[in-house]
Length: 190
Image 1 (cartoon, rainbow, N blue to C red):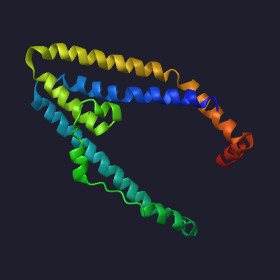
Image 2: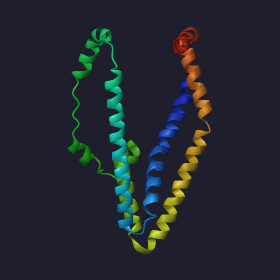
Image 3: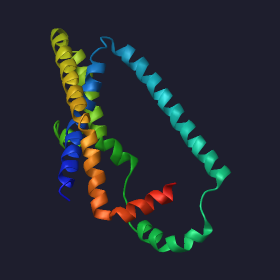
Image 4: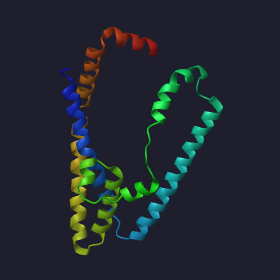
């Protein structure tokens, strides 16, 4: 149990750098473009590739589902009560709310909340704006590239401590569950 804080500190350190890494990576890429039409052409290609891979993944998933037909009828009886409790909860998510939610009402809130859609929107807006302000564009380009390199270096330093975090996580699991439980789980795997 004394090892859990080490795992928590490591996870907090990773969460700490996610938003700046995403933001400064996108901004430093977009600020490279001096011509917005070139950025638009690349954006269309990226969206096309993204849509193609999405449809291909859905197609493969449906094909595998209809060929293998996963699911066992004997498992349905035990899972009916659980499924009923899950489906009785209502989740109101609409496309309109998602689109409206992309634009934040505060510049710093997406960083604090790690809201990736809002963060990407801010990065796109900042990168385009930084490329269009004239003589200061070159200065901002250097600053954003330096900040991108800084947060990538911080991330690589945090990653170096991953073996310690994994060790602490496994040891705390072994202490909590006990050796017999771990061996029985390993027996089920092999």
